[in-house]
Image (cartoon, rainbow over all chains, first blue to last red; front, side):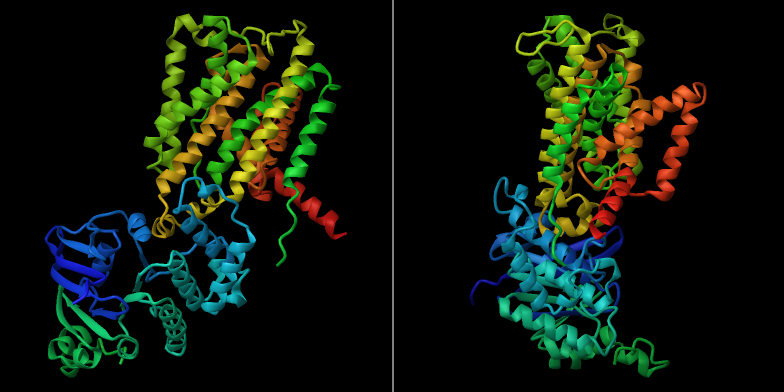
Length: 264
Length: 319
């Protein structure tokens, strides 16, 4: 087997008495699209936060392209080639959509050498790259609108576009469709996945919506109480009895009110 | 949207050239007032960069005072009055101290950043007030300045010489800060104020960016303080290092507005005029007028005096 792009070895994380990750062992190959599912508090975002350096694991190691990145700062990990988007889009609220991308491009450039952070930001070459990104993520209509005024879906697309500016090899998407209406979610995912495929980036995304998981991922990691209880292709994973019980919540719903079934 | 042509460099250059020329014709009292206003504006220029980043310091009189006392001490201890030595020394010392203190304050935001700076400035204030050798609360006199060994002797000529040099320094500082604000690091001001998490995840260290801006603001305050000491011919803790002076710097920052590198100079001049006229009309309650002015600015001109000028300019363009 070739070297995996991302590898977690016996990853553990506890917050006091609460275990958010227990002995997570997983390897992701380049160009895979992996969905991470699990109920609230199952440890999905904790896993993403450990991979991107926001949280330091209590034990275990994380390797990226064979290099140990355990406990390194988010900005270092970004520069190594792992970027992320956020459940609640993290954008520069008072700046326009175009300026959000421009600043992101500037920072990516500032990481390339001494003094480059002092280069003028409004340059024709960067403006052309901004236009390309606006077109690719279909947000050109909102170009001069301040981010704070954007519809939720556009803000999500901007968030993902900003994460892709540094040309990462691995992208983690934290609930890309949360807060998006069910009519818009496929359109949004189509735009995102087409752009990501074009860049040949490996994708890991946390998702609550099983329709999205079913449609876009090649492999599912199901989390329950900080452990991976299932690692399989989507059809198989969604049929797994433990996944049904602990993640999708079918067993609970059949015994009563249909709670937890909202996304089906 | 086509980017409007940026007239800042041309405008700032023309503005300072005109100021330096016209300034020579001003009566002494107005000349004095302008020198004090521009010296303070240098410090305000640095505070403006911090303010854009969402940071307000209530302690920049520390660097202002350091600059002033450096100039004064070089004269007192070593007999050095050469302006090309004393002013760079003032800037350098403020830069160095700002660099060290920066390691601590860069981790704090909001009221903690403001108050930590205040605390550091009060340490210097305390030391100066207790040091008899430096004149304690009375301070001491500054040697008359010289340029390349030439000292005019006549106070009126000296004052005008200082003013021309101050205009040159202020022009250079304004252009450099303007260029800086156009760079990626310059945009990492409002971007940091908006969203630190995003900046980190884009791959830039927020604390390092803040540290750089802090050192820049310290350097500018040091230079401004140096000019102030030379212009007044005297240093003392209460008019250069006390927390009321830090407050004054913040006051002028808000009065001026963050819109342009020219704003601190216009704002500082406006402040100085308001203060002197208020003092003339109401010697016992001049602070009342100054306070009401600030209230008016906050309520009706949140972008500062500069936004008023910008509005007038836009209207002129549209007509």
